[in-house]
Image (cartoon, rainbow, N blue to C red; front, top):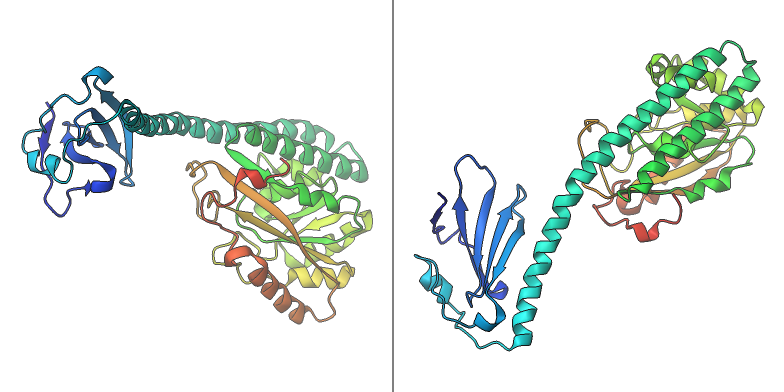
Length: 373
């Protein structure tokens, strides 16, 4: 049996502008709070569920038939004074009655949509992770056979194109869900460009996936541990990706790879961003650019979510929809002074990222700005 009780004067919610008073009802063994809302006319009764963020969501609306609206109905026991306070009964026209009821129906519909999208968001998240794992595992089974058989040049070309297509399929499936949006069209301008270093900021785990999905000939510098990963290791070896350690070998392999006309994807931060606007940058970007005498093309990645940021659990659902946007930044010439170059690069990222961060408030990067998936 639900029990009703009056809140103390400090916590009692009374908004004269909203035209209803809320009283709390509780059911045993149910942690979620439900509130029963009475309109000042006693014509509409709402059942509202208050979530963990203290946001009230209408889950049920009841009204008297229109021909009975205006009948005298007393306030709930113990709430008469509050019920009558500043809300003397009024005679409403039929149009006004419909307007009041329509407002609360809209609130109810909004909650119902949220109730439907939350399970769908989990479905998108977990099916997306499974799909990504299957793509990687499927290519691993093929690459493990082809890797020792194909000449290095053919293996490199095939490996990089397959990874590009696989990542593109993965992002396209997320875009099709309408819960993830990717604005990556700016990267298409880099196709056919001569050798260069692609140097993005690194807000999340999807950064390399997004960039590689648009470019067919990219050598990616990855963590050495990933070369032995069951899902990514064989594919990374086939594509001749470059382990980040040891440093001297990494620089040597990166410089040598430019001879094949490829681009080098290298995150100057060395790891995902943990402090705004970017982490202190590593000097390897300048060393490789100086030795190979290639330019450095900066990439600016911005998002309205912290999903897969450093420390984010893989299976934790973010608030959705989520949006990622990539912009081409300044292209730096091959440096002569590596130390001065890294200072300039650090300052550039700090000043160019909108709002001083790669992470925008939720919902501020809207799907209307997305030009391509």
